Amino acid sequence: MNKKTWKPYAAIVLILLYGVDIFWLSGFCVHYFGEWGIPMYEGLLAVLALGIVVLFREDVKRAFPFHRPTIAKTVGTLLMWIGTLLITMIPTSILLYVFPEQMSGATESVSELSGGLPFGLAFLLICVTPAIFEEIAFRGGLFSCFRGFRSPWPAILISAAVFGAFHGSFWRFVPTAMLGIAMGYLLAETDNMFYNMFFHLINNALPTLLLQLTSSVASEQMKSAEAMASTGILLVTVAVYFIYASAGPFLLYAGNYLIHKGQPGYDRGLLPREKKKTLLGLVLVSSVFLGLGILLFGIGMFE
Image (tube, rainbow, N blue to C red):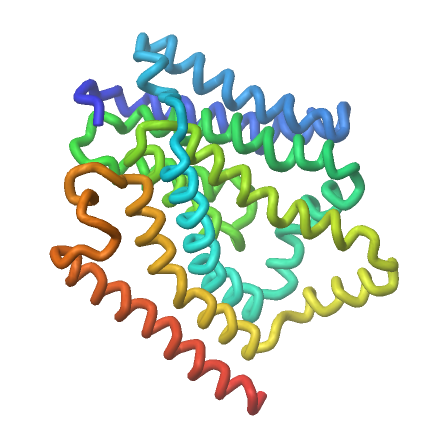
């Protein structure tokens, strides 16, 4: 991490400015410019981040590091995304089970926007635009405010918490913040914003693609699906997500290995002897997820 420490108010100023943009200006932009208001307020986030960096005379290249990506690290990023996605299914499924109406409403606006646009335009507005501008804002400008710490974790956790909170849904805060932690970790370990932007892009691309595919479903079928979502999911479904999540720790481990491949500590293969304790920990966590999934599945069969 950079030895130069920013004043705390730099982060506070950024958070306040981001809040004004996301919770006030975004509504204005979308109201008057429709879907084209999205890149307007998203782009303003990036402008604010860049402006604060310049205002405080920080190194722009250090705040927003970009380097040529490698195949190994790109594949590692993909594996880390899949692993993170599987693990975030746990809190998401629990919230869907306990608070179905609130969770259904949290994704309603995005579903309406994505389903009503051509795929190319939806991909640009929902996937590409946030992946670039939000990463510049949260993993660029805000993240840089905490580079003075010896450990990268204050920057990772604080930027992830703000990222989760500023998505405007209390019900999706935890899974969104978990994704933010993964993206912050990628930036801290690779010092290359390409990878966290790529992570963000594919994370938004999956639901966008699914929504586009289901947009051709008959309206009556769509209404039926929405009704099912609003009444919640079965406990058996939650159990299945726990079982899926049991693969998450191993995917994260493999992805982490690939983004560090060739570096000290990662130059003896995927499963070196010195990583024995780490591997045992992975097996333990995975076993807990799997065991809970099987237990919940058994209970759910008698609901």
